[in-house]
Image (cartoon, rainbow, N blue to C red; front, side):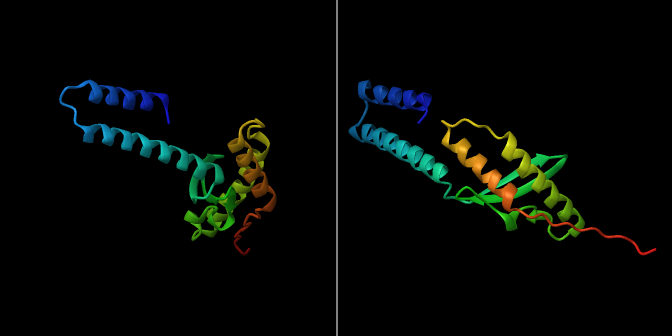
Length: 143
């Protein structure tokens, strides 16, 4: 929980405690709200660290938007460029750009060994760079 939020809640609590018209229910409500916010903060941090929720991402890379989803810190290959799957030529270009993007992210992503999220992100992009096989399509006109 941010310090700013904690300070606000403590200030509200102090106001309620020292205000002559404060009721016991108001104090209980403030404590309940404070405890719920703390629980939400830690629950969300845990979910984020474990990557349990499906997340959608959209990057701009090489003047193209590349969308994909990941969960448990693994890129879902079927989701890569899925928003343009109906246009095979555009899908092919997007797919190939996504492959280059994963390679670039694998190399350029931070190497902070003390940051678990950064390590997980780098591992995810490097695995995608190795595992993802882009669609290569080309249409030519007969001569």
